[in-house]
Length: 399
Image (tube, rainbow, N blue to C red; front, side):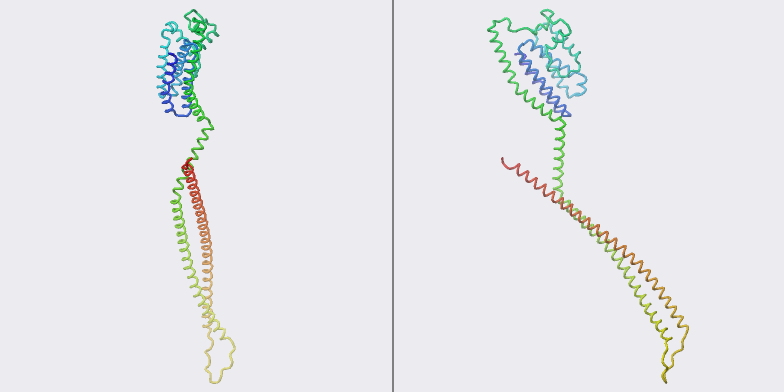
C-alpha cells in the first residue's frame, strides 16, 4: 500500500513542473519530449506499484526515482533546457529522497549501501541512456549474473529478495485466497489510473502529430489561407477607396493629356495661320507680277492702224521692261521662300499629328486597362462579400 500511495505522489508531483516546462517550450519537439517523459514516468510508477512482490516493487521504485534524477542532472540535458528544467529537477530530487524512506525497516544499512552502489555502477556503464522508466532491479541481477558475479552472497544480498515469496509461510489455501485478493487490489489500482494514462497518451499523440513534417506543412498552408482571407477582407474594405482614387487619377491623366494636346493644336493653328497669310501675300504678289507681264506682252502685239484723229500712244521704253523683269525675279524669290516655308510647316504638322495620335492611343489603352482592373477588383470584392455572408449565415443557422 505504501508503494501504491507513493506512485500517486510520484505522478502528481511531476505534473505541475512538466506543465510549466511545456508552457515555456520553444518548439513543438520540446512539448512532445515533456509529455513523453510524463507519460513514461507515470506508467512506470503505476506498473511498479501493481507488481506482485511488495519488496521488489519498493526496490524498483527507488531505481526509477534515482535514475530519473541522474538523467536530469546530466550536463547535456542541463545545458539543453537550462533554467526551464530546474523545477522538474528539484521535484525529482525530492521524490528520490522520499523513495528511500520506503525501505526503512525493510533493508538494513549494508543493503541500502549496496543498492546505491549498484545504481551508480549501472549509470556509469550507461551514461547516455535517457529512457530509464523501464529499468528494473531485476535487470541489475541479470547483468551481474551475465558478468559472472555472485548474486546470492548470503541472506543479506539484495538479489536474494527477487525470488522471495511473501506468502510462502502461510497455509496453501489461505495463500491462494490472499494472492487472489492482492491480484484484485492490484488490478483495481491500475484500472483506476488507466484513464489518466490514456489521457496522457492522447495528448502525447497530439504533440507527436504536431512535429510531423506533413502536419507542419498543413499548418503552414492554413496560415497562408488565413493571411489570404485577411488580405481579401482588407481589400474588400479598401475597394471603394481604391476605385475612387483610380477614377480620380484616370480623370486627371485624361485632363492633363487633353490640355497638352490642346496646346500643341493651338500652336499648330498659329503656325498654319501664318503659313496661310504668307501664301495670301505671295498670291497677291504673283497676281501683280502676272498683270505686269500681260501688260508688257501686250505692248509687243500688232495693233490696227490708228484712227484718224486718235491720240498717239506713248513710245516703247526699255526701262519699263527692265523694271518688269526685276519684279518677276522678286516674285519668283518670294514664291520659292513660300514653298520652303510650306514644306517645313507640312513636316511639323505631320510630326505633331503622329505624336498626337500616339499619345491618344496610349491614353485610350491606359483607360481601358484601368477600367478592366477596377472591374476585376469590384467583382472580387462582391464575390468575397457573398462568400463571407454565406459562411456567416451557415455558421449562424441552428443545427
